[in-house]
Image 1 (tube, rainbow, N blue to C red):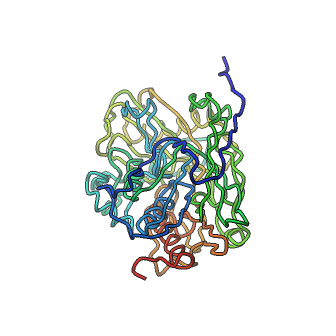
Image 2 (cartoon, helix red, strand yellow; image 1 turned 45 degrees about the horizontal axis):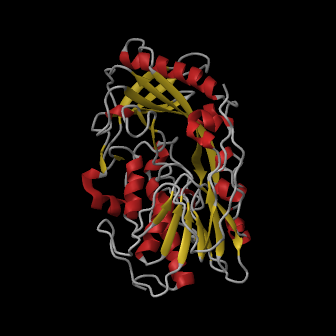
Image 3 (cartoon, rainbow, N blue to C red; image 1 turned 30 degrees about the vertical axis):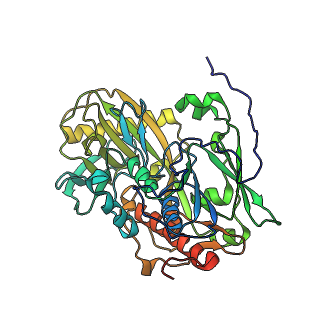
Length: 454
């Protein structure tokens, strides 16, 4: 029986800073205005600027941290249910039951730059080493025909120096980064729409809400059948667009995430044709018993469909059983045809099982859980011109130093709008976080004149 689909409801509040707040999740701001112990005291400003950062991934959080430290009034709006962007974890049965868990984005990271400095403050309570030495492999395959199983030809250790994962999940890193932003007002599970800029007040109007889901989204998030939420409107001195470059330029037409493009002509000119994003498929697989795996993570080379396999349950502070695996496809396989989710769950699962048979020496048992997902945030080209090294998620382990960062941050000082993401700098979480910090510094220096220490 199809779920009841309520009518769309849009009820917008006036674009007034004093309008009542629908927090849409949680807000970690201190209503009394005191500095919480979790963050440092900001630079005191007599007349702080208000900034709306749209996008709660690493770049958005890096921008928030810098602006909050400078005493800005910062509001963060994130369309998904959690913070961290590519640092995302799926708890199939909800966060109250973490036994069935999958880090479905970035699999591991090698922190560098400002991100490394911040994570060092959290110590082992935020990240821990993974994989351990000898448990990370590069496996080469030979496959002359896509219709036939591949043959594993060699296996070699991959160095693990500096590699870590979030604990008890990758998404915990996003929450930690947000907690480090003093007095940050946060709205999650809401899509933001930039309404426009007032010619009288020179302030941006931003509205956020959750629209109706489409049929596919309802299958994976049945709670969205409750329908659209009331829209909340506010005005800000500046707006930062911190999400995928293609969505910044083109908007999104997908169900509750739908949004029109709102980037200024000046930023569009700087961004158009210079970045690229592709789609991959991932596959979440679980077994009811623990298989005797000789490694915890593997970069697969030479296989038509498999690029990455990780035993998610081997990561620190995860449940060991069910034994959860995370698989990523190759880009060539993902773009070979228009795959449906059911096709991916059949074809990619079969390829995985054939591969695992060679690793284990026996055919694996029937999985107790299988779910495919389209990963549409695979960055292919960035503003700096650097090229990716390998398939995702391995390409997300590098870091571009400041000297190699290339073009200036995308900041339109005439109208106070900026844009940022990993696409501004490189392919890693560290690149994304640094890109957000770089943009915040440009905002403070060029438009606000309030760069701390300047």
